[in-house]
Amino acid sequence: LLLGLIIPLNLLQGQSIPAVDSVSYMQLADEAIERNPDIQAAVYQMSVAGARVSQVSSLDHPEFTYMREEMPQFRWNGAMMERVGLMQRIRFPSKLSTAGDIAEIQAEHAHHIHLEKANEVLGELKRNFTDLWYIQQSILFNKENANLLHQFATIAQTKYSVGQASQSDALTAQIALAEIENELIALHERERGVEAKINSIRNRPLDQPVGFVVLPESVSFSISLNKLERLALDTRPMIIHDSLTIIESREMVSLANAEYIPDMRVGLEYKRFPQSGVAGWGIVAGISLPFAPWTIGKTTAAVEEAEAGLKRSEVLYTGSKNRILSTVRGLYYELRAEQERLRSYQSDIVPQAMQALKATTAEYRTGKNSFLTVIDAYRTLVSVYMSSISSRMRFEQKMADLEVAVGLQDLDSFRK
Image (cartoon, rainbow, N blue to C red; front, side):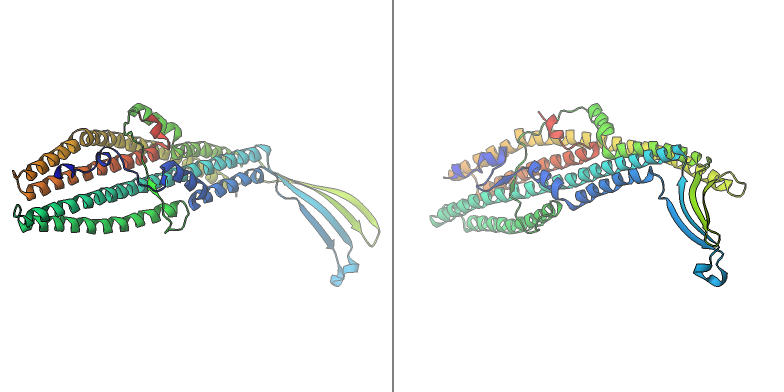
C-alpha cells in the first residue's frame, strides 16, 4: 500500500484542474478593459480632450451690443442716440491654427494616458491572477497531501496495533495532518482576499467567485533584450506621451512668439437719432498692441516661460526613457534567472524528491527505516514542490511587470 502513497504526478509536472469552471487571464483582462472604472474614466477623458480641439481653433463668440445714449434725467424716450452693434475679435490665423495643433496633441496625450492606465490595470490584474493561481495550486496540493497523510496515519495505526510500529508514528502522522488542515484554512482565506482584489479591478461584486485560474503550460522566454528595449521605446504609452510633450512644448513656444502679432477687432453698428429721425451704419475696427512699452514685458515673459517648458520636457523625456530601459533590462535578467530556476525544479529537484519519498516508503514497508524518515522525505517533497510553484508564480509576476514596462500585454506570444 505504501508504494501507492505518492502524490499524483500531474500535480507536480503541470497544473491540476478540478471539476469547476476554469478561467484564463485573457478572459479577465477583456472584462477589466470593458468594466474597470479607472480605464472608463480615461476613455471619457479622451472625449473631453477631443472636444476641445474645435473650441480652441475657432473664433471667440461675437458680441451683440445695444446702447441708448444722452438720456436727460435718465428718461428712456428722451435718448438722443440709439446704437445696435455686432463686434467680433479676430485672432491672427497662425495663433488659431497653433492653438488647434496644441489641442490635438493634448487629445493624443489623453489617448496615451488611457493606454497607460490600461497597461497599469492589466499589470495589477495579472499579478493578482498569478497570486490566485499559486494559492489555488497550494490548496489542491494540500488536499492531496491530506489524503496521503490520512493513509499514512491509517498504516501507522495498523502497524502499531500489531506491534510493528510505535505509537509516536501514529501521533506524528496525526500532527502533520492537523498542520495541513490549518494551512488549508489560511489558504482559503487568502483566496477570498485575492478574489476580492480581482473583482475590484473588473468591477464585480467583491464576494463573487472568480473560478479556477489556469496558466499557459509553457514558461519558455526567448525574446532578446535588444528587441525588448526597442519595443519599450516604440510601444510604452508613457514614453510616447513624453515624446509628444516635447512637440507640444515646441508648439507652445510658437504660440507664445505669435503673441507679438496684434489681434484685430471689427464691428458693425447701426445708429439712430430718435429726435431727428436720422439713421445710418458705422464700422468699428481696432487692433491689440502687444508691443506697447508697458505690456511687452508680459509677452516676453510668456515666451521665456514656453522655452523653459520645452527644455523641461526634453529632460523629462530623457529621464523617462532611461528609467524604462533600466527597468526592462533588470526584469529581463530576473526573468532569465527565474526561468532557469524553474527548469531545475521541474526537471531535476521535484522528480528526485518524489523518487526519494517512493524509496523511503518502500523501505519503511519492509522495516528498513523509521516512520520519521518517511515523514522527513514527505516534507522534503512538499518543500521543493511549493518552491517550484512559487518560482512559477514569481516568473509570471515578473513577466507582468515586464509587460507593463514594455507597454505590450501579449509578450506571451514570444514564448516557445
